Amino acid sequence: MHDLVGTLTAAAPALPPVLGGAQAQARLWAAAAQLPAALTDWIYVECRLLGPADRLDLIVRVERRGRDLLARMPLLCAGSPTRADEHAWSRIAGFARRWTEGDERMQALAGLWLEFDLKADARQPSPALPAPRLFFDYSGAHLRMAHPVGELAPCIWRPLRALFGSRPPRALVRGLDDCLRLLPASAFIPSIGVPTASSWDGLRLCVGGLRREDLLRLLGALRWPGSVRALSRLHRRIAMARARPDDGVDLLHLDLSPAVSPRIGIEYVPCRERAPARRRDHEARLLSALVSEGLCDSARREALLGWSGQTLSTLAHELWPSLAVRGINNLKIVFDGEAVVDRKAYPSVAHAFHALHR
Image (tube, rainbow, N blue to C red; front, side):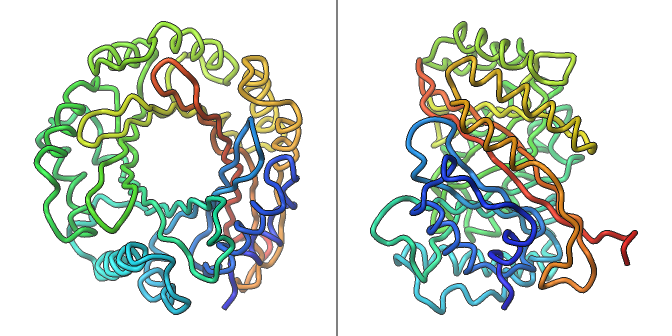
């Protein structure tokens, strides 16, 4: 089996130690070695912008091409780290089979993200792959707040019910409905996350389309315990570094369990430019803004900028040349009440068949 180690080796440079130390990289490679290369053509590595470089997490997107492989993947043959992991993998495989078979509950589903939290503990690196967090990507036309909440909520719940095989807890349903009713008509829900596939244990609501005033109004309505004014000032300074004419939020993360958690995340996307030079310029400006705010150290800024680029090669699991494009997909600031508690970057690599070189 060709694995993701081969893809990362062929399509991306080595990660500098300043982003992830030797043990963190060993855990990353051990996880990548357990995943078939054909499972995904879009890979993220999650790293920290400050503090010890002792953790790297792995995130992959599964679409139609990889869902059949996810259903058939022999992930349990090496033994799962825990009984909960084994149960979760069993549910994920069953979900992928139903997705492949065209289950009508999946009509709004565009893709599935698997996020592997590779914590520094005695089990890592391990021959067994821990069960991932899941993020369900929804088709853009389905989850826009211009539609009534009564139409949106069923679209959200159908794929989740297919995963868990049961109805969500009533308190979680009410919590989601209450949150959706507070969102402006301009908002949309690109994805919903669950922390585990083993049982209902809360949701992560990812919200796009929020202007700065929408964000402040929403946090006030949710009675968020942090300083909305301080968050607003910080957000505005960071947002000015982006190549956008507005000061809106690229993505807001809200955790429901069933009440909204005081811990929230705000994502910043450098740009979607195709031209490498322009994309790198936008990445540099946004990272420099975070350095100025004390949210990123300069060495990691330079390391991340060195990641961006592109490679044309024939990957081991493909017949034709692929163009692999690397960049910083997004940066994330996590607030917990009054304080910034985490700062993350998501260097990514995406590859696709390059028709001009067939």
